[in-house]
Image 1 (cartoon, helix red, strand yellow):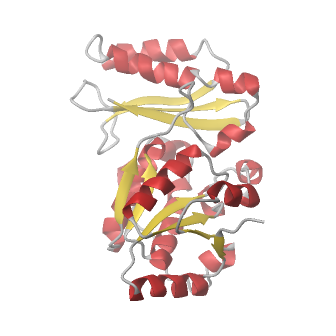
Image 2 (spheres, one colour; image 1 turned 180 degrees about the vertical axis):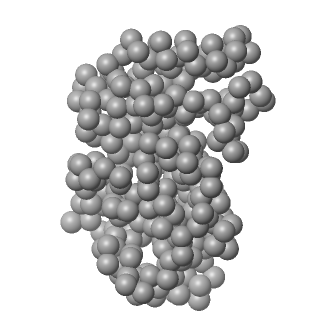
Amino acid sequence: MSKVQVIHTAEALHQFRQKLNENSQSLGFVPTMGALHNGHISLIKKSAEENDYTLISIFVNPKQFNNSEDLKQYPRTLEADLMLLEGLQHCVVFAPTEAELYPKNDGFVPMELGSIGRVLEGAFRPGHFEGVVHVVHNLFRLVDANQAYFGQKDFQQLAIIRLLTRYYGFKTRIIACPTIREASGLAMSSRNMRLNEKELQDALIIIETLRYVEAAKNQRSIEETIMAARTLFSTSDLALEYLAIVDPETLCELSEWQEKQICCIAAHCGSVRLIDNLLF
């Protein structure tokens, strides 16, 4: 059994937060869906460096899955997650039930996402970001953290969370942290647990393609680069969903290179959907 403190209810979380306030102690927040890996740990360690306490939420949010099979297959490994957190100082886990996080008197009012919610992930996963906004809104309201930490692998999600923070007037400061990769270059993800050895190798075409696009900057047009990158990707066993070069602020597709752009990829490796990006 793990010695990590676990909070299951909104009421217990409120009491924990009140005690920190009474002692003028800061709280960092790392929201997760569990199946923790070193990418999550890097966020938690950064929070621990910058705050007196860190709260890690573990909740597989059904509202952000537009695919019921994907929701069913998503790894749920609470005991292993808690063991991974052993030894980290001043870390507390919030593992609520669905009823705790989405009470009947929720009071949530959806925000209009606009074009940023309709492109890339928004185009291929209808309802996904609406579910993300709902869960993050409810978590931020309950946790009332000083700072919250998010990985840049979910770049579009990060942009939307910044939007919702302003929209709902949350005081929580959003801290973006670099994508953590395996030695192979594969972006760390809870979904990687579902890949077999061959698929883990096959999935490297994602970072290979992203690096190819980065190297092509200013050498050829964006249109030519995308065509060549798609051709490269097609040599793999993965099924490409999208490959786009977009503005990091608006996420609008670019027709010409600019000082900063981000290349975003989503693809299916067997039955597992993977995303990644590279900002350059």
